Each structure stands twice: as structure tokens, then as C-alpha cells.
Length: 457
Image 1: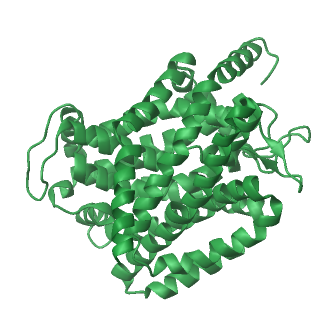
Image 2: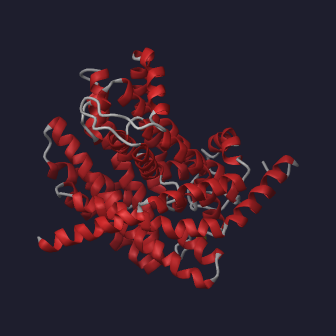
Image 3: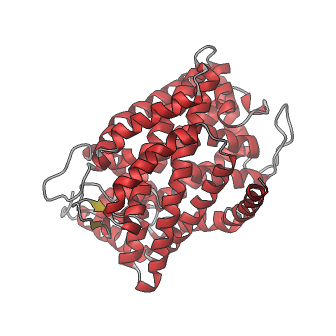
């Protein structure tokens, strides 16, 4: 017990360093640098990205290399990012930083669009084909193939942290969140939930990335649209309070907020810190996880896939997280003193009595399930990079077995470790993005020049 206490204290100290001001500045600074270097293309071309996403629903011509459609690559990425962060993460940010935290989540997303674009461009540009003929890419590969050999250790470091982080944030924590939500709402035993999720994940996971992408391509759009529609109904019911909600968001993004009701008050720094941190936790821009999925897309053009990838950050944070945040604020639940998924559930229930809490519970369950699927790909690719394809089957078995363990465990320490590992993943990835930014800028300029001249579509 003393050892666990000591480990917890050490991890908390490390977490305070890796998620301190320097990390937040590095993540936002990298995004801003890429946005300026790209001349705001990721924002100006959002419509183009949507068009490419629509066209990417079907597999391209046989000359296009890859394992899954461009559309399903984004859905696989979104299956991992749309999760507890969109429900519990937003609520936690508002609880700790006030309504102004939502503004800083938006700012993180706007610069994160450029980061996610650059990650996908590099992932496709530097991807490899493994022994089974599947495409593999991500930070470890663009570090290995894009930088000098002296930087190879950074790729290995990313892969180690990515493999470990998945079992926390992408597996046990998600299973525990679902088990807790279903136990609270329907009194379903934690063990039953853990075993059920493990069986469902096994049925999908053992089919590899193609089956995961197929499931994600159907489930992610349905769950996202359903959740947004439910939130939209609430905002329409409270339409007269929406302007006041935006006023709170913009005012307290730059002004300290006093305690009110169960809310303890927050400084401006708290709004910035928790808004940025929870924003990154939700959309994962800069962590280096999403490009692993995009590297499998059927495309020969890194830039085209990059424009599709950047839509993920927009959908995740600007749309879905905003809906959660606005419902929490317009309902008045943000002053209740509750936090996490409980706060989101209270907000939806108070706005839609008898229905709202079910929306959050079921939404959280589906979001967490797809996150387990999405992160299985990320961790598997990291393990494959380190140990080769012989490690795939043992990894999948271990991944499935970890689910019921997570469902019944006290994961306070695992949350802390996973959060720390996410930051440690981001460090080598952000260094690589900065060093390889000239490649991103060059490919982008060439692509849109040729698009303008009619040489590419």
C-alpha cells in the first residue's frame, strides 16, 4: 500500500511537469506555427475537407494504396477521440475552469486542426507496408523515415508510451466508465458489463483494422448525429438562454469568476489550463494517435487525406464538445457542484426530464465502446513497430482480457498514469512535427498548385 502511495505521488509530480505550462505552450505553439506556415489553409479549406470526406466514402481506384477507405480512416480516428472526453471531459473542464474553459477548448481545436492535418500528411507520406501487406504509419514511422537516424530513439519512445497508454485511456478506463454508468442507471453488475464489452470487442477486434473500420464507419456517424440531435433539441427548448450562455463563455474566458451555488469559482488561468488540457484530451490533436489510423487510408495523396483528417478535430470539439458544454451552461447545472459524467447527466436530465440521463448513459456507453476499438489499433501498431507482426495475436488477446479487469477496478491511479503517458506520447510527436514542417508545407503548396491547374482532383 505504501508503494502505491509513493508511486501515486511520483506520478502526480511527473504529471504536473508534463502537463504544466510548458506542455500547453508547446502544443498550442506547434499548432499556431503550423497554422501560420500553412497560411490558415486548414480553416479556409474546411469546406474542401468536407467534400473530400464525402468522396472518400467509397474505396478509390485500384491504384490507390491502403487498407480502408478514406472515410472509414476518419471514422476509425473519431471512434477513438469521441469518447468520455466529449461528455465527462467537457464537464470537468467547466467544473474546474468555469464556462470560459469552453472558449479555450475552441481555441485549442482551431489550432489543433492544423496539427491534425500535418500529422495525417506525414503519416501517409512516410508510411510502410508490413509483412502482411498492410499499411503502417504514424509518428514512429515519420520519425524513422523522415528524420536522421540520430532521432530514431524518439520513434521508439513514442511507440512505447503509445502501447502503454492504450491500456489505460483506451481500454480499462473506458470499460470502467461504461460499467459505472450502467450500474448507476440500470443497476447492472460491473462484472456483467466488463464481460459483455470484452465479447463484443473480441468479435470486432479479431477481424483486424478492416473490420474495426467497417464497424466505425457505421456506428460513429450514427452515435454522433444522435447525440448532437438530442443536444440541439435541448438548446432549442432553452433558446432564450443561449445568448446568455455565450456571454458567460466569452466573459469568463478572460475574467475570473466568483463562486456561485456549488461552483467554487475559478481564475482565468484555470479556464485556460483546463480548457486546453481537456480539449487535447478530447480531440487528441498533437498526441500522435489519429495519424496511425489515417496511414491505413486508401490514397496516394497525403494532402488529400490530411484535409479529411482535420475534419476530425472540428467534428469532435467544435461540434460535439460544444453541444455538451452549452447544454451544461444553459441548463444551469454548471453551478450544481457536480463534475464529470454526473454533471453532464444532470444537465441533460434537467432539460429533458425522464429522457436526458438515458441519452448521456447510452451515449457514454457507445462512445466508450468505440474508443476501445479505435485505441486497439493505435496500441497494436505501436506494439508491431516494437516487436513485429508476431506480437499481434498476443496483443489482441491481452487487450480483450484487460477489459473486464478495468470494469471492476478502482482506476484512480490508472487515470493518472494514462494522462501522464498521453503527454509523454505528445512530446516526441510535437518535436517531429516541428522538424518535418517544411515537408508538410512543401507537399501542401504543390498539391493545391496542381489542384488549381487541374492536375489533381
